Length: 146
Image 1 (cartoon, one colour):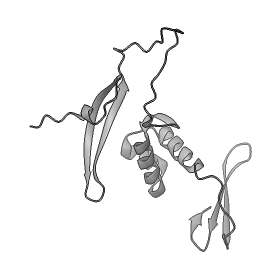
Image 2 (cartoon, rainbow, N blue to C red; image 1 turned 135 degrees about the vertical axis):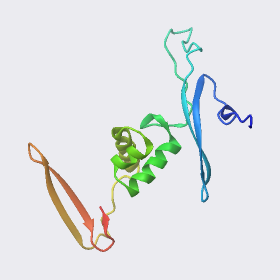
Image 3 (cartoon, rainbow, N blue to C red; image 1 turned 45 degrees about the vertical axis):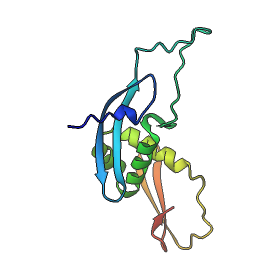
C-alpha cells in the first residue's frame, strides 16, 4: 500500500481536502477529482477592519464557485454530447448547476456569425402560459443549431 497524499498536489492553505478519486483514461492520462472545503480552524478575520476575507485560489469557475475550472470545462464538453439532465445524473450533480455552467460557457463565445448561414430551418414550439415560445434555428447545410 502506497503512502500517496493528494495534499501534495494541492499546496493550498486554509482548505481541507475531503477525498479524491482517480480516473485513468488511455487517451488523456490520469485525472484526479477532489473535494475541497474551507478549513475553519483558521480565523479569516482581518484585524484592521473586522471584515471576513476569503482567499481566492484561482482554481474555481467564476460562474459557479463550487466546481473547478477543469470540472466546468469537462461539464461543458459533456453538454455538447448529451442533455443537461443526463450530464447531471452522470456526475451526480444538480441539473441547475450543470445548466448554469453550460450557460456561462456558451456566453463566452459571444454573438453568433450569421454571414455564412445559407439555408435555414426555423422551428417554434409553445412551452408555457403567457405566450412563451422556444425558437430553434438550424443551418440546413451543416445541420448545426444556430
